[in-house]
Length: 548
Ligand SMILES: [Zn+2]
Image: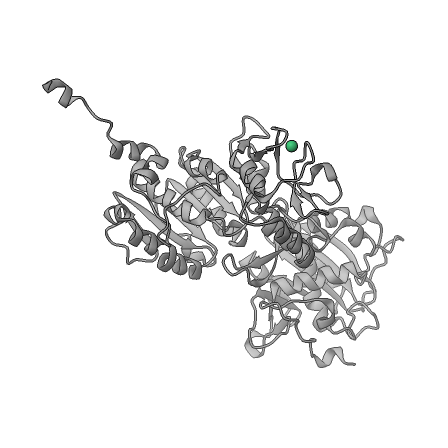
């Protein structure tokens, strides 16, 4: 009998160190509102929560409870898998909000977390057991500091600064067992989370139809009815196999009986696609209303959890090539004003043009030799170049041509709506420009055929390849859904597109004396659909140079 009393019972606390779902159950973990965490309405989060694959990506709409789960998961990993973790959010403000909001409330609701995390007053780091979690924003260089990490978690990837995320990746890759998890609403194709989704096993949530017992995943297509899970006429979800409508209860049942199914085997990344179609608390009527009322970008990114590939987000090949003159390239006369736009980096990429011709030449070089040749050939040429790439060479080039070379710095002047601000006095060789609005201006002018390209498709093919990599994304606040602004991002080399932007800046000051419609100087930019950070229309640019 004595022996029986000593029979080891299952040690639940020990199991909770090994299995994260046991941990949730055993400690009755609650969310920040004090409600016990459960997966009844969000069965698709169960597997994501316990997935400990080193490389993970989740495409998801906002507000499905992911952040709460990821915070709990990160704490559990720090404590039980004994890893130091870097957890990034777009900005430091987001970090402050999360620390004061979700994290501290989770600790207050769950005594076990309080035992793990003794001191939780620090916003930027928490000691969990013997390990650390560092919380970082991505919009200042200082943030990518030298802290050890065995797991990087990147939340809201598509609203974050990609170069900072790259820095974290590079550092982690030096560790053979480094883990990286990404989750975000997607924005555009081949950018942010979509890059990782494309190389993942692409798991889809297959719901189980209560009528035909067949599994199919929920999707939206206006053009292909066989791929449409909502019956537009009845305003209900339906099975894509038997085409029978589902009541709200049947839809909830179908989703609850669902399962993740991989599209690809043997991929490094474990990928999940979550959409609002899978959220049974969001009715079909709401989704149809969003389709009708919100813009297509919003609907794709925030409702369907998919990257948006529609017209506004990209400059198309057709748009660009509609600017071709399709005859032999004309070139500026030696006494004409010419503006040279230069992007500096590993190589020098440049475009040449003026108001009479538009752009008449483009290319790249390892040295400043060709640029010197241009400056000598056209005595009236001015150059605008990226101040941030080749720091030494660009300054030396500027020194060779006093008053003719301008270094361009990205930055916005919050006091005005002007796109550029030219330096005064000792800074007269510099210009500050509003990066995203300059991109938008260039793209709009190309779309409206205001940028003649001298020559044929053959002359401008490489130039197109650089434009092809540019996409526009919308930044919205992940909690309030408020529009924060637009951003042009690249997913590959964009040097000659960038050179065009510098050329265009130069044209604002040196292009309008010529008689040409290139600048569109009578067209207030407020009419061209620019949006300011708060979504209001920007007033027309008032500049006396434009009111001849
Ligand atoms: Zn069915």
